[in-house]
Each structure stands twice: as C-alpha cells, then as structure tokens.
Length: 59
Image (cartoon, rainbow, N blue to C red; front, side, top):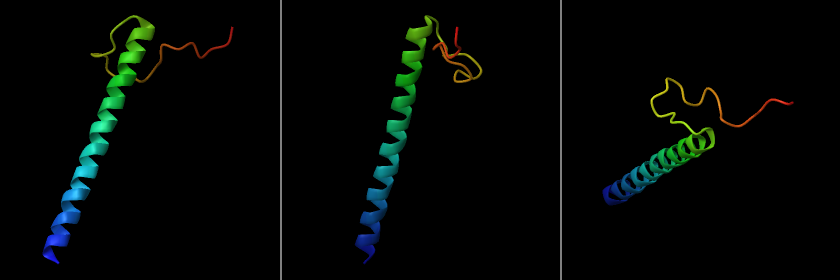
C-alpha cells in the first residue's frame, strides 16, 4: 500500500512539473511571437501583456 501511495505521488509530481514546463514554454513562445510582430523587445517591460502588437482597433 505504501508503494502505491509513493507511485501515485511521483506520477502526480511529474504531471504537475510537465504542466508548468508546458506553461512556461508556451509563454516564451507567445512573447517571442509578440516581439517579432511589434519589432521591439518586451522582455524588460513592466507588464508585457498589457497590450499587444496586433491592431485591435477599427479604421
């Protein structure tokens, strides 16, 4: 029974770690795409996701 609890704990920890790795990878991918679209770096801005490089207004 103790081995089963240990196994479930290890598998759960690996799943959580994989989710966090996926989240940070996708966040980096989005930031890279936004930097390419805007033509400037948003790495050191206070809140890089307050705005977007896409034109959301209508002409």
